[in-house]
Amino acid sequence: MKYNIPRGTFDILPQTSYKWQFVMDSFRKIAASFGYKEITTPIFESADLFERSSGESSDVVQKEMYRFTDRKGREFALRPEGTAPVVRSYVENHLDVLSSRTKLFYIGPMFRYDRPQAGRFRQFYQYGIEAIGSNNPYYDAEVIALEMLWLNSLGLQNIRLELNSVGCPTCSAAYDEALRDFYRPQLPQLCPDCQKRFEQKPRRLLDCKVASCKALRQGAPSQLDYLDQPCAEHFAQVQAHLQAMNIPFTLNPGIVRGLDYYSHTAFEFIYEGLGAQNSLAGGGRYNGLIEQIGGKSIPAIGFAGGFERLLLALENEHIDFATCPKPQVYLICLGETARTAILPYLNSLRLWGIAIDFDPDKSSLKAQFKTADTVGARYALIVGDSEIEAKQLNLKDLQSGMQITLPLDNGQALQQFIAQNK
Ligand SMILES: [Zn+2]
Ligand SMILES: [Zn+2]
Image 1 (cartoon, rainbow, N blue to C red):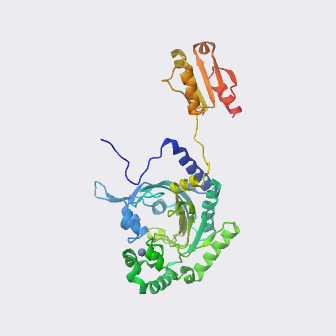
Image 2: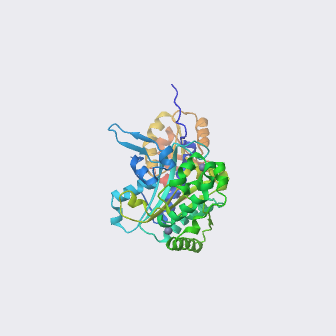
Image 3: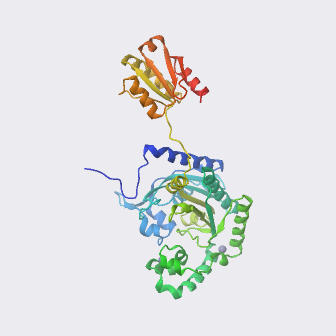
């Protein structure tokens, strides 16, 4: 019996896992420096949570959600996105009572039954930011700045921030009506999905990927012409904040976001080097979502991005952003007695935080030196029976060839030597 990985999933293998750790750690750092704290929610939630938040008619709920019934007949779903679970937790744990604003970030796998292609998987790893509690346009700019500064700091400079406002329920109704008027004469030429969306979610027609639908949207009315006074004022403030922060952006009224809960600001971070899957991250305001899933009316804004595409983009730009960790010390052991005697010393070194490796299946000096070279160790620690007897160790710097003798203590002498000779 031979088992294969499920379609649309991937293993993070040891030869690349350090890259994943690097980008995840680096995201944690930038989020912390903006005052965001990590939240981790379960991988599965009540299916109803996503149906209510994303909208019954959304592609996520209709086609992409991994739904299952547990042994007691309860309906669950593997989370297709991170915002609804965070908001569920926020409401359930009364985080609004603790503070008038809550700044959260998350990292973890999400699941969507989607057609796998480059940069798109059925299990994919996302990072996300949620600033909950304020409608201040400063926060729109803050979360956008966080992502832009982070991408730039990783070495990605050719990022385009596309910005839009999708208005509020009041003014978007007028816009929806204008869109229906625009599309009505062409209704028969639209794809079956768009024909279904026409009545309920005409804005979704703007992000249909079918070529004929794309062509038909030429000359469609812009949401930005339909914003009411408060929405227009908010959007102007967001732009003013971004300008003050020197974050460049372009307006794109075509950014509508796939999920129902967005209002006001919507944005995407585009990197052109990846073909069709060119969105590295996206988000927007969701002032209505918390109330929609049982909390108070509390405004919020956030975004999510995918680590897969980010890593592809870094690779595509040939950015050398992380190095594979190597052992600092490789132990070369000659003889059985020495090998047993050195074990407590090895453990002490490892407790001091020194990465030390050895291969008990290699016995000759030559084979062990060769392995030290293969694993890329900086130092070789050479020990035989006579060294154990003399309570001494030989350390060879494999870069310079310099060799020194150290006392066989609890590991402190070597720890100090390495700290001084980084
Ligand atoms: Zn409005
Ligand atoms: Zn369509």
